[in-house]
Length: 435
Image (cartoon, rainbow, N blue to C red):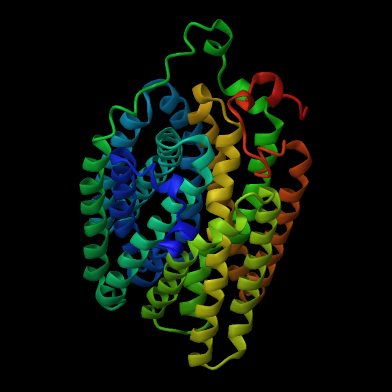
């Protein structure tokens, strides 16, 4: 019991009521499907379907740009119609797009499927973060987001193990099976989300306030704290998730000349580390400066990319070992990034604009997902692939520095150094103080 209390304090466990449990179940089931196909985009198009690296990276970048362009719209829809309706439309369409992606052979249909997956995938961040913030009290948000991220990776870990036992570069049908299962788990998961309809409606208590009712994206963009956070997050993500998705698997297969099955094993170390370390990390970062924690993430990710570069000089078996160790380091950074980043955004967001704030934060994923493939293609197309990991690591460090510069624009409560009181609810005036 003492161990349980140290990992999950009693006051947080008491918040695990029916709605929160169902939300976490939705997260877990959805991510099992996601884990089946994680980081296979470039490998699937180039090594399985035979398209060029240029086409694959350009499609990834273009689809990410389409998702990026639609992200503000999803944020507005979340505030206007509530997270439930938006999430249902998003995930049903996502499942259909996965089926099209799995069965397509031509550039045209594959491109349409990729764009649909990106456009509707970009919508998930806003409604899900908004819904979770409603299901827990303000004091538990950081821990709740961290616990959710642990379940994300537990699901991805299960999916990755299933994928490792099925996927085969010489049998394209195995990839079709993976994407079809992903679509099926998405539809199953959405049935759990539908049970949260009592919490998923739009916020209406601000309608009587003419000032709040008139607020929209212009107010969000005037919040210099949010703008600075998004810029820092974009750079950090290019040095992390964006580049990992764009070229990590390709680097392993084409530069390190390791079999594709190794990718599943390496990502298993990633997800298992997050599952086992997340609760411990949450307790270590509780009450600490969130911006400094984000800077620590940048440092860990720099080490991860250096390890990947060093693997070029190692024998195959040592390369695999070093990559697994590097992925553990990357994962520890993830356990810090996810709860802290979400907590910063939802700490400064007023309730009636929360969907827009979360959508704006999600822009970091979209923009980094657009830029990272182009940067990756530049390295590989100019025969600079051996320098790609080191250059990406340096980008992560720049993102960490930008996160540190955000500190002076946040209050102690917003930076996680003090508990916010109800009176600390963000106002337009407080959000403008960084101007």
